[in-house]
Length: 302
Image 1: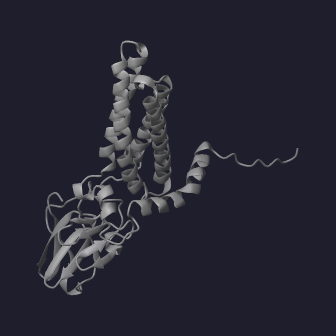
Image 2: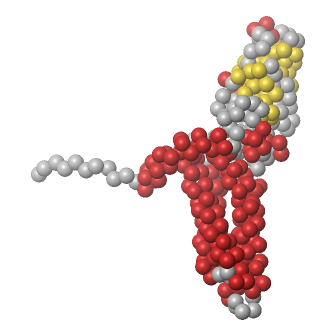
Image 3: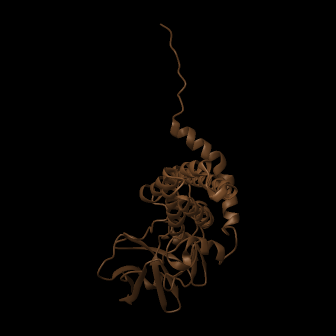
């Protein structure tokens, strides 16, 4: 009996992963450049596309518009195909839906690129295919629109078929987008479930705290970053709400700390977000000095 060595057969998952990885680095570099991620603070464009100024990620809010418009387009196309002679109004309505969806999809494209440019690992791979399918849907609806405009009374069976294919693409893309958020936690507030103790907890002797240095301490099991300015002390969560980066390892500029992972900037005095991609403030902590000890307690809300 002879020994036979078998090479492992690559799984489908590994094939998809390697395909995304081959293009991921280059595409992310391009995405960062296009969405302002490579600019110096305050990175206004990055913050705008991330939704920082509104306190909520912008991409999921915008995606509702093209999905709704193209859903209406598909319904109207079905109505028109059921009775073309008497339902020409439905074909014209489908044309309007296709146009609205395409315009809104441009906003979804750039906000999605801004979010995806900060992902890595499995979430980056899923995001890659999410974006690929949405891009395919955009192109399909664009060709569909052109065919509608070139057809008498905006009626085209080929345009409707392309729209149906594009609609399937956005449904699958939407499923992948949900997987990124609900399974992999992309763009979920990483401080939402941090514990909050009811009482002040001593963390460090006041004599051990130098001015202008970031100190990582623990309060109710939660990492907190502490800063001293003169006789004043400030403390916020040490976890960046955007992706969980360690703010205590970030760069301090005055009273502003920059996350070392994706460059979100927070005011240590009150936890405000000054620069995206973060959209929610860092939780604040009340600070007092008692018996030579600095004591902290999380404030209610953010």
